[in-house]
Image (cartoon, rainbow, N blue to C red; front, side, top):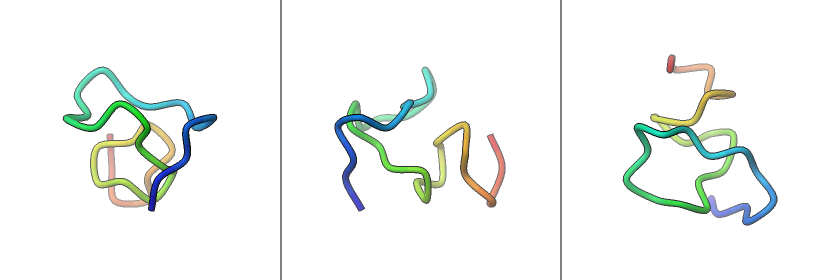
Length: 31
């Protein structure tokens, strides 16, 4: 789930990480 406008976390291996990314700050799975 990509989202270029999404706030990707610094720990995310993918820059345009969407909010559902396992490493996204908005992820329900955790930071």
